[in-house]
Image (cartoon, rainbow, N blue to C red; front, top):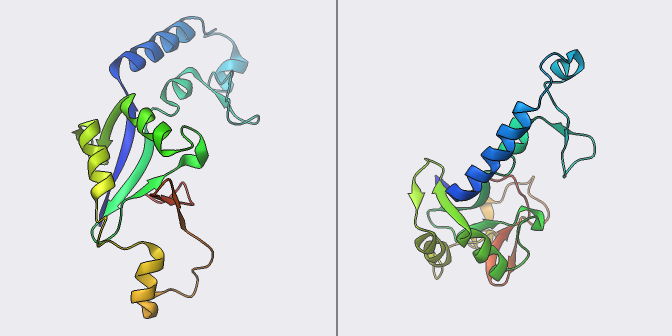
Amino acid sequence: MGTNYYRIPKSKEVMERYQVLHDKVTRLDWFDTNQLYNDFRNIENPESEWEMFNPWDEFTHNMRVHLGKRSMGWKFIWNWNNGKFYKDKDKLFAYIRNGRVIDEYGQLIDVEEFIQMALDWCKDDGWDTDSYYKENPSHRPTWISGKHEEYIDGLRVSTSTDFS
């Protein structure tokens, strides 16, 4: 059992996004059958040349970004999000400090307390994948192959973005 943590924007950024949403919704042509059929998806997704957003998709896009997970007995593992928001420890912490942090239950957590918890979580006696399977070789599933984590700037980072 573990707990996932997410970065959400500060209220000011949410209000700025809301204003953009409001402006786009008021300009929609409610009688355009093509737009209705396509759920008003007429905004290009900056991450995909094949996907279009509607104003709500654009408003909620990256509103909640998975930062990582803590699990009892394991060192904290960070979600690097393929380098989309940060590429090193300093940029990660700046990104976190520029927003708010919540856990998977919606509980708001002080940003500095979160960073310290993540850095300290099982730091000295916690497992990472290599140490766990060295200590428990019989627990290693036969399907596991490849590297599932790495260390970047001293932080344990998942090689996957989908591990919550």
